[in-house]
Image 1 (cartoon, helix red, strand yellow):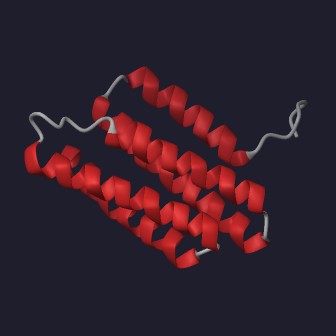
Image 2 (cartoon, rainbow, N blue to C red):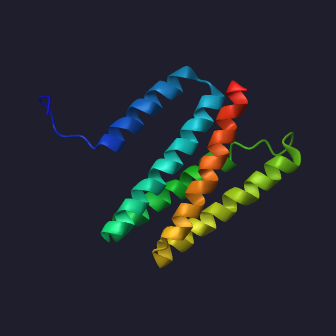
Length: 131
């Protein structure tokens, strides 16, 4: 490597993305970063589950749940968001429950289900900005 300790590529990506995104201060971009972070953690959990690495799987699922509940869900404007915010809050709770299920039962289908839901929401959010 270039004169330093080898760095985890996912950690390096996350650090650079976080520094870049936070510097922009764009709330829309920050939400995209939360989606990306949750998707990244689910991908890490999937790989760890496939390799039989229970501690890594549990840690990644825990991080994904934290991003979903303490990031995405808390960003909802429940006062002016109306029914849409309520439905998203319920969907985020459902995703957290499915991730807990995935962790307890080593369920790839549950991980894939949450990954698919987050991907759909992320794509819709990205379209809102560009469209």
